[in-house]
Amino acid sequence: MELGPHLRRIGNDIVAAYLIVTDDGITVVDAGLAGQWKDLLAELETIGRPLSDIRGLIVTHGDSDHVGFAERLRREAGIPVYVHQADAERARGHVKSKAGGGKMKVGATLGFFAYALRKGGMRTTWLTDLVEMHDGDVLDLPGAPRIISMPGHSPGSVAVYSQVADAVFVGDALTTRNVLTGVGGAAPAPFTDDPAAALESLDHIAALDAGWVLPGHGTPWHGSPASAVEAVRAAAAS
Image (cartoon, rainbow, N blue to C red; front, side):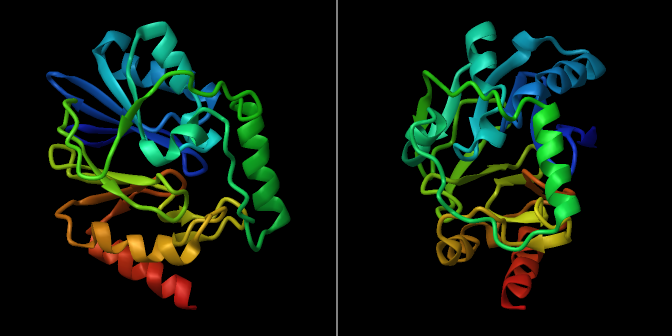
């Protein structure tokens, strides 16, 4: 799905991942669920680019619905996978979130888990090798992605800012569709380790100049990061 000249989305409002597309190559942000490998290949075919054009994959945090096809991409295509050092063990499957999901609606929750099951969410292959990244790093990848630490959802959650893509990719630092209730709109994400820290971390993206705020779950936010942050905090307060 095209969002802009250098920006594509794969997946849907339940689980999404993104591509930064440039003449010099492609950067993938998040790896969704294992079965979304086919979505990645289909999107590459749509834009007429080979798998070998991918130069790197950045994982916004180490949960299974963001690590999805990362190890397969690394093994089969030799693509480096970047993870914040504080989530390295989470992305290897050695540490898991203990956070509760909060309120839920049966239909929406069953829909999320049914989709995850269809897309291989129960057979995640955890990373066996990765490149650790840190706050402030500007990676030598297409789109010059800058890493912004966003602790809260997990210790090593990050946002990824690309001026070329006119976007900030936020993983689960916020959501625009609660996977457990089906409620749309910018809000705090469920399954967050430290909700207070996650809200504080939103300050790290509020001043960015971007036209898109792109979560791992929900509709792409077409507007400024400041407006998304304001909406999340309003939802949290209510």
